[in-house]
Length: 142
Image (cartoon, rainbow, N blue to C red; front, side, top):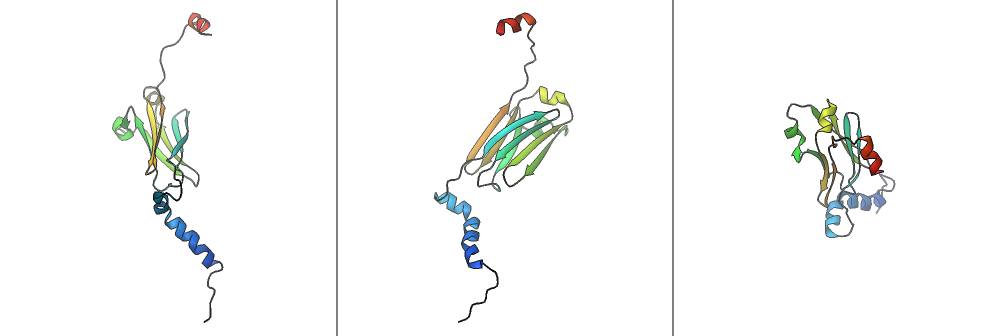
């Protein structure tokens, strides 16, 4: 019997490929601990809100979305004043809300939701309180 080597290291790669292909099944069986997604940070600059998520081992199964006052973005802004952008890398998923007006950010409460079969995580960005303190109140609060 003669062996022909078509791909160097192919016998060693086979178990790795099988493990990666079967990862969700192995994870469900309890062999590999799979954590729910974790929201790493929510950041805000002038007309954008960003939510950065660590999906753990289930990047393809992780869903990241925004709620505005407990409604979907498309329901809260049906006229398209707010756009959603998703960027994926090997380490995280980032979802951005892009606004046309700063007023839309100030007057609403936003929730970033990340979920996959292992669980979910949420972070809330509350609207700003419009009341301002007088100098006297600031002095007493210090």
